[in-house]
Length: 224
Length: 224
DNA sequence: TACAATTTTTAGACAAATCTAAAAAAAATA
DNA sequence: TATTTTTTTTAGATTTGTCTAAAAATTGTA
Image 1: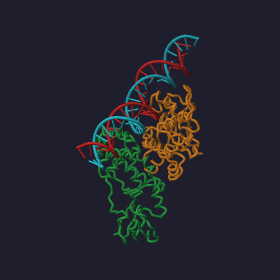
Image 2 (image 1 turned 120 degrees about the vertical axis):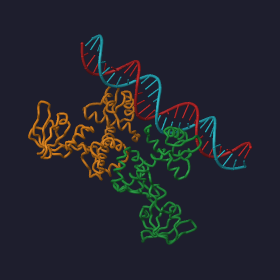
Image 3 (image 1 turned 90 degrees about the horizontal axis):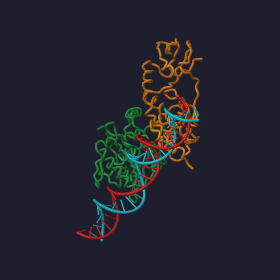
Image 4 (image 1 turned 60 degrees about the horizontal axis):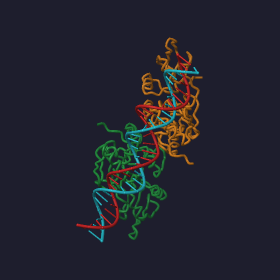
């Protein structure tokens, strides 16, 4: 049976399930999905039944769901497209990193393998998106990168900001205001155990103090 | 009342109505719309009622429809987006002119004014798409160009191929096989009144004979 | 273990977009 | 003008994706 047509709504559920599986490291419950999708639990149950019938998810009542290989392939490809479009928007159209998510959310549903291939080529086969998230290749393989949360880095160490954990607009704009972006060099000067905040030197010049909340949302690649 | 949300299906109907109004120079009938949309007449009636309720079309039972100003603005913007994306696909991603229509058909529904503005800028504010169709500007104004159908051009005249009337894949591929593309220089050598076919010299070198069916689908800008 | 809290499913509705078949209206023609 | 043909609308269904309220199942806790 050739792969049936998959709607945008279905695609969005697959992506949500993929992310929950990944983040929580286990089968996704109805509740987590309904929160991610901002819909009612009843809608989720309905959709899960549909996805199961199409053999995109492994689903048994009250058990929590995982993606089948087919579902996983679709979800991974959506993430690939989403992230490639984000690179396009930032690199080619000069969008800011806090603006691209909702647009990529629409662009990711455009159905043309050739378009993805050509876009990837046009962008120079990027491995990471504007937030530092890895872009899976055409076979669904994600690039791996040695990285640690800034909050885990010891005093005196140096590194480069390579990714953000949180993607919210306010967070990204706050980083902009501090002139902290991907590629920024950081050196850990001090750590205040009282509230977990840290003092850093960025780009070998100005100093900033970051709260624990911020530290725990920045990924650093340590300088060897 | 702020502009209500407009679905993709609604957008497609508006675009179809716009084109019928333009081509036939009069209100679009149910039948023409149902043919353009490849749906049943009943579906069209339903949709017309919805569009009328949203004040996007002028509609009275059995009268034929035209777009309201609001509807016209939306349709024009869709055409703008469609054609800009086609330019992107051809100029930046090296797609052939016979491949881009269905992809642009999806891309045109992406909702972001900023995206359109930036894309237009990125492409260098093109005035015509890869088929030679004018791209309306942000205010909805279409560029005008002096052009005639090849079938109307007199013997001895020279000109440049600037547009195609038909957009079908087979037609475009046939032109490719003759090495006829936008910008190709043509000189009319002979016209056969028997079947309306014409003999031309293209790019000041090779000769081709085109059937009337082809002549009537090519737009030429005459050389002064 | 038994009760309470939480999660998930079921039941029943609704809106959007579509369909077929039949009825009504408009247009064409004899 | 009367009749036939064509076009358009109505009536009644269907599918997708959603909802609320209530029931059922699972999980947590006293």
